[in-house]
Length: 439
Image 1 (cartoon, rainbow, N blue to C red):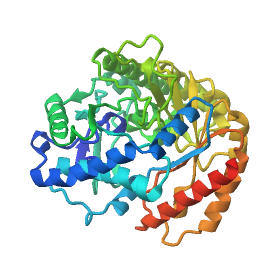
Image 2 (cartoon, one colour):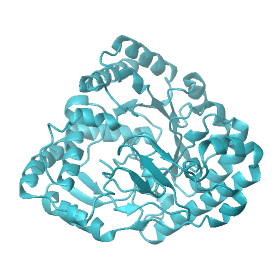
Image 3 (cartoon, helix red, strand yellow):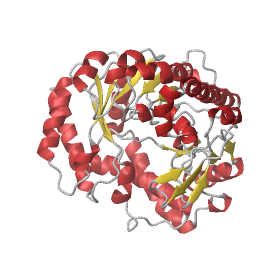
Image 4 (cartoon, rainbow, N blue to C red):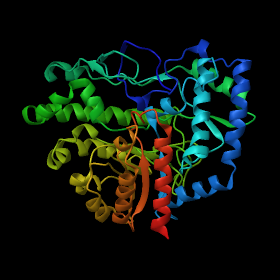
């Protein structure tokens, strides 16, 4: 559940910098007695799941994977927008905005365990995020939306590098602590005796540079500018990189970072369990070096490795160097630029999207990195999927990656054709094929 407003919105709309309850206001931070009666049994069910032997084995499997000593391949699904077709309005019972937010979160956890039976780690906590607006780069970016979760148009404000570069001046995210604390307090009041309720931000997701560049200058302009105005492109990327590093300093100084070496989603796939974090000198105050970091450059999928190396990598590198372990990539195929990406600091998890050459990536990654295998979500976005073909494709890919450290991920589902059974069946196939490959 994200923003609820529709129509015009302003600011650098990067989900990495927005709380999942951004869009709520202080008056929304109330859970009625009737809503509590709905939430508490769901929370008790989640606690039972979290304490189960099955979940303990899943936690061990993730930790061994992240420490590159895998017990087995792991698999999980995040249906993303498909959740709206799984937990539907007819199922929802809470009436308050905050109550509905936690009802959805709890029902998701239960569905993962009871229906999908994948390796989604269910822990006995709820993370309350900071209610915050994203950082402001000094130039207004206005978005025109037709609906809250639909396409948007924006007018990139950097029209003339000579005139506009000087206007780039990072202002840190504005945190509404009154609303944040009210959310934390109310959630603890209703559910704190059942689940651990934690204040936890996800400011580190994602630290890629090309999305803010494109908001400021435009995607098509980026492609042309690399040839027509290369020095100006580098200057703008340098300013974004420097601003991001300043933001990381600010987050550390303000004590706003949280460890993500547990059942926290990291990178564009996978969970954070590891004994390699935090740092050996950790004393309670979280620093970037105690965390997983993540960057990607999906928007430059059409850019040559040479241009990526010249224009993008030098400005990502100092950001990634701040973190104890790092993840790289999302939807972009990384095989063509692997020789560059592998130079990132403490790289551990590498996204291998459906458009990557799996044979090349298996050869490159071996058992030195996590092969984050993304399967094609389009295959279950239809009413009648070809499950035999899905099985054969997955079997082939698991054979290709035998000997690698593999996680299999179904995500980026814009729809599952209103057929939750599509996802359940995919998970069953994934489980059977993984069991077959390890026997």
